Length: 365
Image: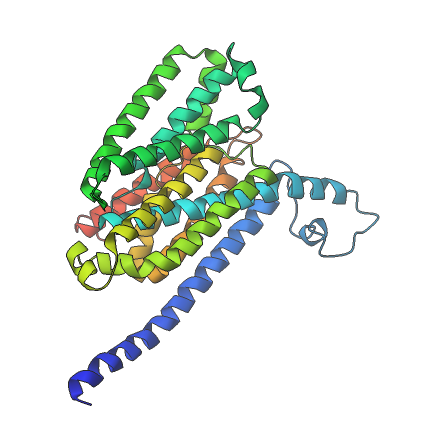
C-alpha cells in the first residue's frame, strides 16, 4: 500500500476521533438546556408549582393525603402545561430543522422556510377559515370543528408546496432558483390575500386573525401533540437520508452528482420535509418567525456546517428556544398572554443582525 493510500484513511480516522468529543459535548449541552427549560416551563406560570411538588404531581412519588395541592398540580400539569411544552418543543425542533435543511438546499445561510411562501400559504388559508367559521356559511363546515383552523393551515401549506414544485420542475429537474423566486411571488400573493381578509373582517374576526398570525400556543392539547408527532418522526428519519447529500451539495450540484448523490431526489426529499414540518407548525400555532433562520445560523458558527450534527442540533436548540419563549410569553404579562411571534421576532431579529455585523467585522464580539 502506498503512502498516498494511507494518508486519507489516517486523516479520516484522526478527524473522526477529534469530532466525537465535540459531538458528545454539544449533544449533552443541548439536552441539558432542554431539560432546564422544560423544568422551568413546568413550574412557572399563573398558578406556580414549586419544584419540590413536581415529582408528586408527575406521579413519580407517593401522594401525601395531607397535601391539598396534589389534585390542582396534576390537573394543571397533565391538562395544560405538559401538552403545551410538548407542542412547543416539537414545533421549535421542526422549525429549526426546516431552516437548516433550507439553508443547506439553497447553499445560503440566510434562507428560511418563510421565504418560499409555505408559511404565508398556510396563514392565508387559516385566515380564510376564521372568516368562514364566523359567517353565514359556518354551518357548511361545522362538522370540522374544532379542527377547521389547523386543517386549513396545513392544506394551505401543502397546496403552496405543490404549486411551487410544479412551477420549478421541468423534465424531472427542479430549479432551486426558480423555486425560491416563485416562493417569494406566492408569498406576496398570499400576504395580499391576508390583507384583503383583514379588510373585510369584523372586529371579532380581526382580533382572531391578528392573534393567530402573531403566533400562539394557547390552544395546545394532547390531540394536537399527537398530530405533530408523526411529522416530527418523518423529519427525523428524513435527516438521516439527507445529511450526507446536503454536505456534498455545498460544493455545487455538479460536484454532488459526480460524487454519487442523486441531486434531484435530494431536492424533492428536502422540499417535502420543509413543507411538512413548516406546514404542521403553522397549522398548530400560527406564524412564528426567525426560529428557522437564527437557530441553524448560530449552531453553524459553533459546530460548523456539517449537517450530520447540525440537523439534530437544530432540533434540540429550536425546541429549547421555543419552550423558553412560550414560557416567557405566558408569564411576562400574566394573567394575559403575549403572542409568541412577537417575542421570537423581538429577540431573533437583533441576534441575527448582530451575527451579520460580527461576520462583516463591524462589531468586535
